[in-house]
Structure formats: C-alpha cells, structure tokens
Image 1 (cartoon, helix red, strand yellow):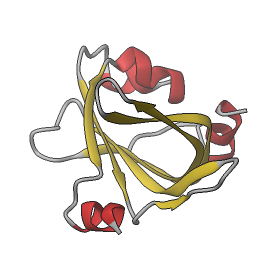
Image 2 (cartoon, rainbow, N blue to C red):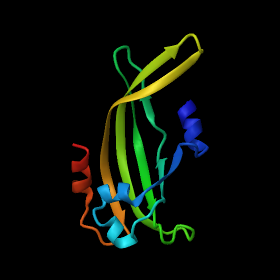
Image 3 (cartoon, rainbow, N blue to C red):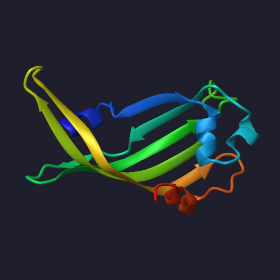
Length: 135
C-alpha cells in the first residue's frame, strides 16, 4: 500500500549524471556519436508500482522500470538518446538496528531483463545484447 502511494505520487524516480565513458560500456559507440562528456543525465523511474512479497525465508521485490539517457548535446531541449524498458527482481534483506531504531533494506541477487530498447542514434546494440550484459 505504501509503495503504491509513493508510485502514485511519482516518487519512484532517480536522476543521476554519469560520464559518457559509463554509457560507452552499454552503447559501444556512444562517445563516437556524442563525444566525451563529463555529465550525461540518466533517469530511472518505475513504470508500475513494485510488488513486494514478504516471506519467512525469502522476501522479494519486482517491477518494471524505464531508463532514459538524455542526449548530452541537447538535454536542455529535452531530447533523449536512448530509452530502455526492463523488468527487475531482487531478494530483500531487512536489517533491523535496535540501537538506532532503523530498518534498512538491502537488495541481493538482482536481475534485470530488458524488454525494449529505443536508441535515437545509430547503434549495433539491441535487446538481446543488453540482456547478455547481465549474464
């Protein structure tokens, strides 16, 4: 219920700035197309409310995400370079710290399966090749 409310309020979104060198690991010609860039904006957001299953032995979380890589040469105009949609799943490990009254959650055995890829530049990378990266 709480995750659903957080999703409904569009709070399951993360923005990060990464170097083009990082993106060149996924898209082997990213720097050829856009040049070397210190900061490329990447947004990851949940496209549905994540499903959490609490068990006595294992607890899990799963859902669907969309990763948008902005075009570093036209990010201010809102142009994308790539959009990836994927499903994810992971085991949840809960850590209760009595001395600080906090509950922490750690992900274990994460898995990502790319469903779709739209590159707005020429690239040899496709869904199958992206899914091989995770193996």
